[in-house]
Image (spheres, rainbow over the protein chains, first blue to last red):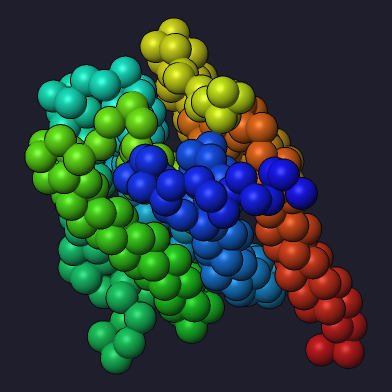
Length: 240
Length: 99
């Protein structure tokens, strides 16, 4: 009884950073974090649909997908993986900086994250440009004349070529999946640009940095998606 | 106040340690991709990817240090429904023997 009355009598303005419908700052922070995780769960299902489509067609057009996968540049893919891992580190360092109340350091690591994000997108754009040059972009201009995996060892007359329609499906999924991932990266870079501006103005303190933390969760999630994209699109047909 | 118990400041050492582990994992998975392991190439690539993803989620996304049990529920829920999506779809598509 007493406890509930105490809440009603409490002055509402004791801490401007604490919204009135939360009991404590810890609760307020946990609620924001939980909301972000629910959003990420939705993102898992969103990308899950694309991964499922990839699995179904990979199973159906196994050799043709292998052939098309070998057309991707593994060096650029691996470089981009490293760039994203480094950007995840800069996000962790940004959160550490704001927790320790170091404003300049925070802005520095946020800008470093943006730079690495842009580097990723630049390398991706270069890869896309190569696909256009080789006519590996699905659509009217698509053309594909490559061997199935492992056929190069055989005498020329016996070699088998991949079905171009099936390879086109690989590239459709490649562009859908990496394109959707790149779109998330673009959103992330914009988000971090906004955060860097607000951080520079001194909005975030060790007491309040929820936007930085949640943007960090988003960025790490996009990194995790790429880890799987790199494995499935670039890596699994290299040995043949 | 026990409020601040949920706030974990990651040490520089652990942040860099996870970063090095992720880079090592990337090197390992690229190297393993060129060795012919038959059907196990896919298994190895996905296993290394899952280890890397787990490191990111546990340490960089602070799941290991959170006191909020609901976060765990959301993550397990997301993975469970992803499993249903992939497993039931593949159970269908891989058993269409009449086609």
